[in-house]
Image 1 (cartoon, rainbow, N blue to C red):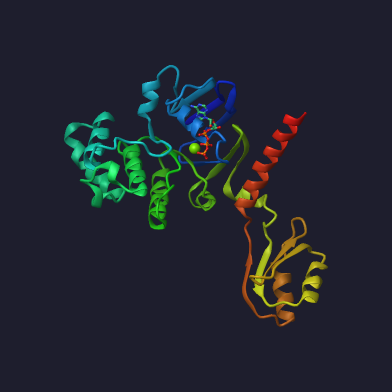
Image 2 (tube, rainbow, N blue to C red):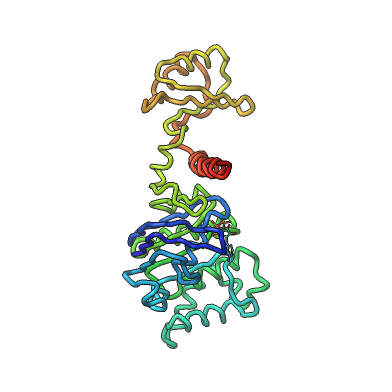
Length: 316
Ligand SMILES: Nc1ncnc2c1ncn2[C@@H]1O[C@H](COP(=O)(O)OP(=O)(O)OP(=O)(O)O)[C@@H](O)[C@H]1O
Ligand SMILES: [Mg+2]
């Protein structure tokens, strides 16, 4: 559905996107992750035909950006970074205007507008001018204009940025509900969102793809993958005993929160052993969990590794 090959963007001397290649398929929600300035928005701008690539090719639903840019844009709904719109328009007029621009037949415009207003919860601001909306509502209007023509491909640049927790939840559910028959790319800095919404995540750093995996594969790379964490008052000699168990690689103790994390030796399952040990020593535990892995730690490792490499190259 979306095919990018050797995509690059150079601004003056600066390479913002550096030889990116990937395919996103129908039914897939692909997450773009990466530090500020990594090149996520620039890549999205190129896919949507908003910015011309310096080199490389882009195809959306089989349509080549260079051969047929308008045809390609017809297939896409795009929520740009910052959700720009026409501030002086009222929400209802803006949505109807976009519906018209997107070629929705005149007799269907009111129905489509009502549908989208209901779906994105915009009833209370229907007659309000966009410039007077709060940040979250502006973003919701941006989302409404992106999906009103029911496009096959959605490119959403930080769709939940600035939304309150309830709205974040609703927008994530909306994305999941649309995913079945569309191809969706979202960018986000909210790592929990990756797990909830994305089938796959591409991590971009310095314009390059540095990881392309499912959320669980990324979690498996974490040092916390299959670690056992418990909250309890525990004496240091017992912690040493745990540390010396053959199935244990290391133990971390957070004194403030009385939280202990036990890291397994490579590929070992330790939940039962740790649980039995705590029972045997009659330690009263308020919480005992096995961790899937921490995306924030994986993200930090992968992107910092890239920064370190770049700094070393610069010194050479
Ligand atoms: N029009 C432009 N002219 C010059 N440099 C630009 C231009 N647009 C983007 N850049 C640079 O390209 C790099 C990538 O920017 P981009 O907006 O794609 O990052 P991002 O990954 O979306 O970051 P963020 O997480 O902060 O949104 C940045 O260093 C940015 O300053
Ligand atoms: Mg961005």
